[in-house]
Length: 119
Length: 114
Image (cartoon, rainbow over all chains, first blue to last red; front, top):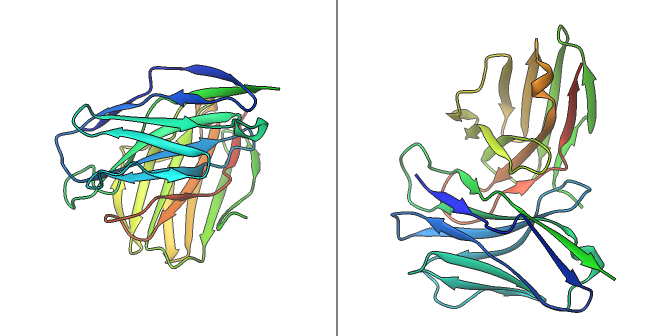
């Protein structure tokens, strides 16, 4: 079974600075997707960024970028120029690509990291 | 703007009540999901529907009964719930069960069981 671990229950950052959230995962598969979702107090889960495991290039989306280390099974999120609106709970998530088995189609979440942004 | 719509946003019910949560999407997605989320915890998968058929049931108690009447709608029928069932219930959809792409989530229904 796949597992996702976020070792930082809480993080804080000053506005305009950079912060990195950590995520590691465990899988025996070679093809999968990794995601970072953001859940603000308004509670809707919003996709921040995604990474296909077969792509070596790290995904970027404006101020958000990832450091994907497939061999190390590490998938960290870097937020540059942090803004007050970035304050939220961030979840790292894994989704297998290959059909079959009881975990097919599931999105497996880490425990989450609460990010606080100080003005 | 959310493309997955959940109603109601808030629901309070007694342990003997019967109520339903509703989820709707018009993105043409063929996989739909129910998740349960407790405060400051990750969502826990409850049910998955693929092409209107129940694909995954994560050993959820029978007091939760899912229904997928068509490709755009997903319901969760609630009966004889317990106070520990109080949580945020999230609906999500994806293009299909496997393959590429993320899950799109609704805003959730906050359920309180008295």
